[in-house]
Length: 139
Image (cartoon, rainbow, N blue to C red):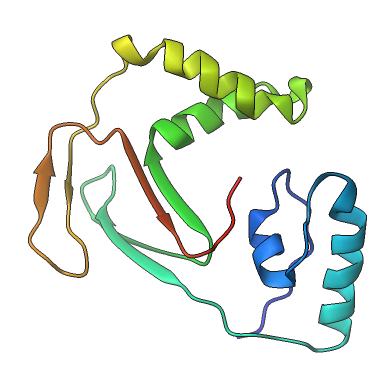
């Protein structure tokens, strides 16, 4: 399956990976132009994909595939706070990480069981941060 992407996010780390050029801030206009040229020109390339099998909140098996980044724990929690602070612009990420770090002593534990590539599950009392990247760039 061929899919075309237009950079439209804040960080655009995946677009930087695919296009090979910066895709955020002042460079976003050039990145959009490069993406449109690639799509119209029919250029494509293979990309890696990760598959995560987990148990959903309802207790049923859940499978997700990603071509970018998958995270659990502190990272997405801080990002959720940042999304509620969009009025701060791109500073919202830096500010939210700092305010969430201040709350760490009161953070609720996130128990989990983690196995990699079908290995034996490892029980963890608290998953502080899980991140799985398929790309070189992030943030």
